[in-house]
Length: 93
Image (cartoon, rainbow, N blue to C red; front, top):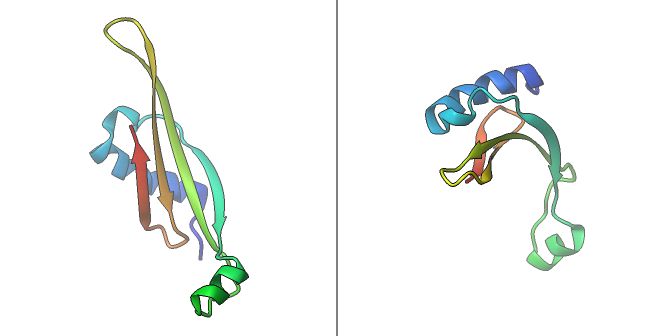
């Protein structure tokens, strides 16, 4: 059974507290992305793939900080989570 958005936020919050504490208290924007390999590509590779697409949730954390010189800098971290609640990728600055 897929996790609810509330469960995802709670699970990823623990990860964020360890790896990016400055963003842990920010409210993430949750989006859903679907990945599938086009039929033509699968045929060229000679593989048979399931017809269903892989669906993941992406939690995006954003915060604006002020540098020493007064410039405003965005800090953004994206955490990609699969349907089972496993963190499969994290990107950020």
